[in-house]
Length: 211
Image 1 (cartoon, rainbow, N blue to C red):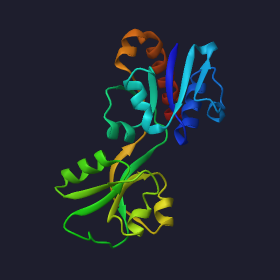
Image 2 (cartoon, helix red, strand yellow):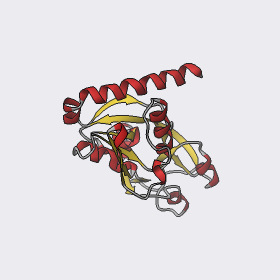
Image 3 (cartoon, rainbow, N blue to C red):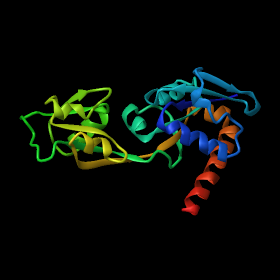
Image 4 (tube, helix red, strand yellow):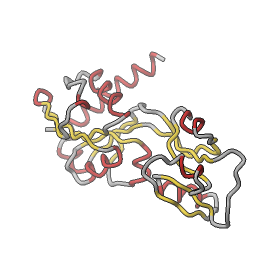
């Protein structure tokens, strides 16, 4: 059985769409299940429905053979997994943002983010000393209440920034979802995983050629 860690949320529907297009007979309403583990016996697959930030952890520790994770999660978590395929879904990017015309408020610049490793690396490369404030949600609130001078966060359409009166200062990294594999599973289940990669690759190429 191939165990797949799938992120609940916005990536999920696009990932299921890809699997269905690749000919896998799986329930299209998988995400609506209250179960966290769903077996699909006819495909000899098991799906673990996880929080996006946990997918690479499950794959690294071998409780899932493969997983679908955003590049942002991979950059932040730095897990020991193989990235085998860019799925070209859930496109967005990481960016630095803040209030328009705002200046850094002190010698040590304050940055709010749920990506402390990525943010630290970004400012270190710029030679800027920053204090990273880790938040788990509503990152846009930080500059509005004076908690931070800047934020580093995912931007999809830019609508959330605009609605909160924030502007984007710099794009940091493009983000798409990737197929990741546990190194041991890749040795033990290589033919099954290679077939999955091949089938998904054909779907991705068809989609790109149709554009």
